[in-house]
Length: 123
Image 1 (cartoon, rainbow, N blue to C red):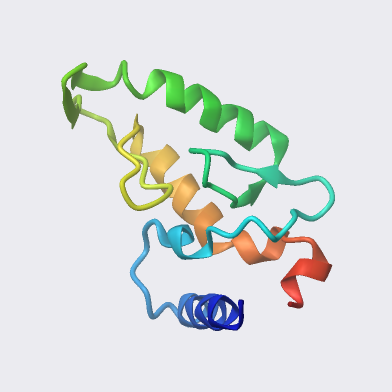
Image 2 (tube, rainbow, N blue to C red):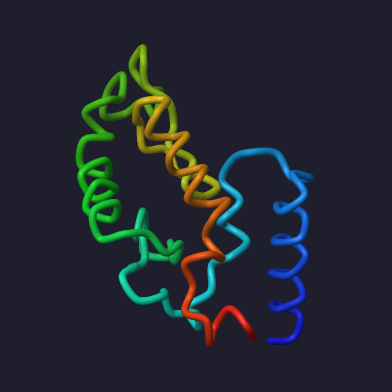
């Protein structure tokens, strides 16, 4: 557990100084021990996505999960149709969304520690 806390602290430190590229950095924060602060819920872009967001954003991500397959070139090709990009909520997230939706998810990833339960964030 100490190694996990150290890894989380390092990622948070690097993100706070912009030393990691924008993108799906929340993959490093995939821990089930942390609860979300009041008013926030796990995003659940997949079963291991524990970034805390508002309930409205979780519902939107659920819709994106359904619509994302419609935005692909074909059901057997993970390439997004023109005007769509991979969401990148986590490494390997191939749901096709608008660039604005990807930017929103990247922002949620960068801000994830602000929405943790204070008892968990202080661990």
